[in-house]
Image 1 (cartoon, rainbow, N blue to C red):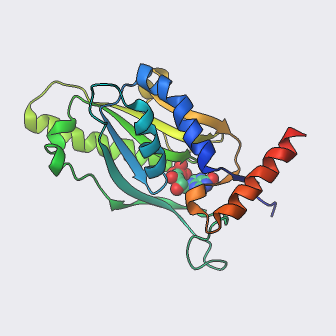
Image 2 (tube, rainbow, N blue to C red; image 1 turned 180 degrees about the vertical axis):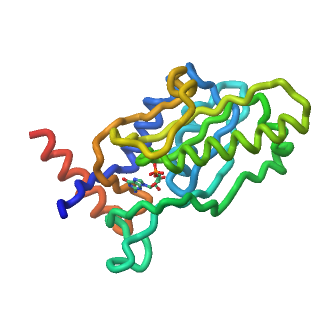
Length: 215
Ligand code: 5GP
């Protein structure tokens, strides 16, 4: 089997991808709430929040949901091993869901602009699940309120893999520019810095690849 190409992304690069995407996110989406999909969406959401900060306005709250699709190769690893590509599962498992109690309950999302943040859009299964389930919950809250207000979900990912997707996102979301990927690339395996056990080695591999590409 052909070796999957591996890419190494540094914290610095993640920071800059969030920074350069912030202006577009503010202009096209202007979110009032972020929902980070854990664990990969946590760091980008937190960095992004610094760049979305507007003078005189409170920080955008970040809620977390935990979704899991990938499982490690059982014969090679006991658990997700840094740098070892994982095989996709077929079912999304919820490990954590919204806790809106401190923000006034689910009803408080009705009518809001909500940005879902994840690190990578691979098969799109996870993002489809997140959007559908969140839409269901918000619709139930909207009906409870008897409101006509529309909640607008948008997506930000650091990387989108340009490949045949298994999951689908609302056409209207894509057409109206509410799906933003900082970078679109091929079907490689991306090693993110927060997964690294040896961050110096991770950065070294990233620098090595960068100098190879510069030649
Ligand atoms: P999807 O549902 O789009 O296939 O996959 C979404 C999740 O799979 C991501 O949130 C991430 O946890 C994991 N994943 C997919 N591709 C990669 C990759 O290239 N690198 C890493 N580190 N995780 C990935």
